[in-house]
Length: 183
Image 1 (cartoon, rainbow, N blue to C red):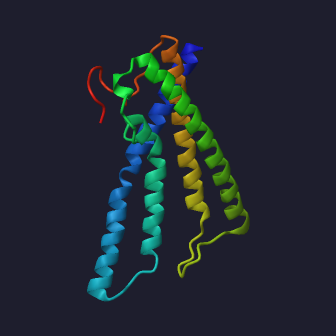
Image 2 (cartoon, helix red, strand yellow; image 1 turned 90 degrees about the horizontal axis):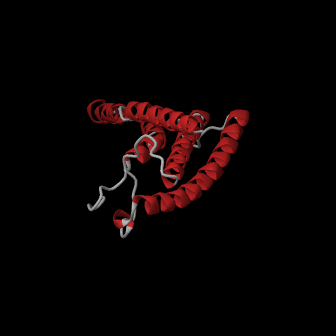
Image 3 (tube, rainbow, N blue to C red; image 1 turned 60 degrees about the horizontal axis):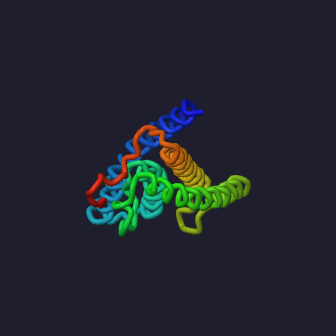
C-alpha cells in the first residue's frame, strides 16, 4: 500500500512538474503574439482580429495547465494566521479536510468541463466573434488542466493521510519551516 502511494505521489509530482515547466514557456509565445500584433498595427496599419482571442486562449492554457505545478510549489494563497505554528500532524489533518473539499470542487468542475467539451465537439461550437475559432481545443486543454490539478490534490491527500499515520512520503514543498512563518 505504501509503495503504491509513493509511486502515485512521485508520478503525479513528476507529470505536473514537466507540464508546469513546459507551460511556463507559453508566456514567451504570448509576448511574441502580442508584439507581432503591436508591430503590425502600428507599423503597417494592419490590425489582426485573432490576436486578442488567441492570447486569451494561451492565458487560459497557461493558467490551467500550470495549476497542478503551482499547487506543488505551494504558490497558491493560504491564510496563515495559525497554520505555521501548528504541529505537522495538525497541519496534515487540516490539509486533509481542505484537500477533500478541493477534490470535491475539482470533480464537479471536471464534470462540467467534460460536458461542455462534449457539447463543443458534437456541435462544432465556435466563439461568437469575427474570427470565430472553434472552442473544443481550449475546452480540451481546460479539462486536462483540471484533471492534473485533481491528480495533484489527490496526491496531497494521500501524502497528508500518510503523514497522519506517521509515514513521510516524498516532499510537499509548501510546508512552512518549524518556528518560521510561511509566505
